Image 1 (spheres, rainbow, N blue to C red):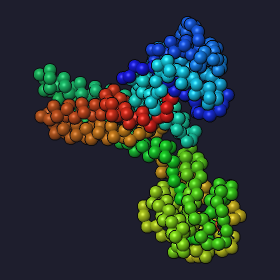
Image 2 (spheres, protein in one colour; image 1 turned 120 degrees about the horizontal axis):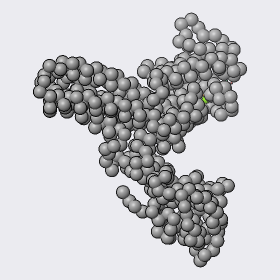
Image 3 (spheres, helix red, strand yellow; image 1 turned 135 degrees about the vertical axis):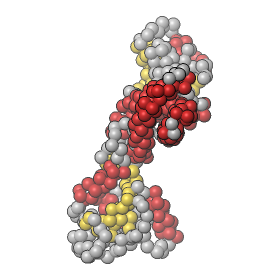
Image 4 (tube, rainbow, N blue to C red; image 1 turned 90 degrees about the vertical axis):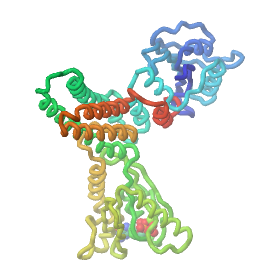
Length: 440
Ligand SMILES: Nc1nc2c(ncn2[C@@H]2O[C@H](COP(=O)(O)OP(=O)(O)OP(=O)(O)O)[C@@H](O)[C@H]2O)c(=O)[nH]1
Ligand SMILES: [Mg+2]
């Protein structure tokens, strides 16, 4: 790992009451002293107001310097946070000056990577830092905060402990024990452990849907023929004038999106161009975009009315058929709509929201508060599950496959170690941390 002292702006760029520039590394004190033109003796957790000097000893600001002595800091190294006034000119000068003294601008996620390498957190917690910062709903933030306190890691560690105990018994049996009489009991006990943990790991694998919903949001796409009232419905759902509406067929040309939160899950509501034989190249492009949105939708709201037909999507995506303009006509017998609304008058909109919420929650339901967060975690668990299933098979085959069972069990434990980042490669770390922002 690089031992440079790194520096970056920890708060967003632009003007604000304060900005925080963070130094981390063994030369943090030295650089802070040079920046402040003082020999101030920083002591553990001290907070002090000192000047900020830029080139030619010109003072540009006074700042609050906060010192976190290693190892009691975010990264585990000496960290100094310099809270100066939030002006890009001041912040730029501070960064330039510190780099001039020898600090290096941090790579994305480098502070958290150092925290991981210095044992301040495991890889699951490190991943949650990034996800907490990018959380799009209160529930998503609360979940990542729980993970940061070790919730998911604890669950995985318990599974690992269970497997380890089983492995020790198996290894004892074929390494040391000369007594074959207890082997039946051992096989049964190990099988029980396998069955329990296979169920737990399967649940965790299934839980990835919730996390994907939290991170990527659920895409709810309103579509139908032109003039069905899609844009009016979009506006009614949002209670705002987001989309242009008119009685001219083909009014909406492009996709129009709006982000909101439903039942704790972030969703993107999308209004689309109406589907009909396009009459101009621009409309053709709009219709192509509608089909693209339909193909990536998690939930389709298919709108029709007395004078337009429902679109038949014919695929596996969840779909709510909505009959609109119920104020001027009713759905005929055999109409596919599960709900009638008048987008113009706002009738039935609360009921539609309820149905949308039900689908969104069912799409992201996991049945548990603990869920996995990243494709990396999912891959490690998948490998663990495969190894446990093979362990179970070997155990079922009886005493002569004991060694094979132990081999597979060790592989399962190794997968959990990779999950927690106990064993990891530079490649994996690179992938985990490059998604972070600079300064975190
Ligand atoms: N009476 C009545 N008229 C409605 C209702 N919803 C929409 N309309 C009218 O139907 C016409 C078309 O509405 P839009 O919302 O622009 O329809 P659209 O499906 O977005 O149409 P395109 O963007 O062209 O595909 C407008 O004149 C709306 O005022 C409704 O619930 N009742
Ligand atoms: Mg429209």
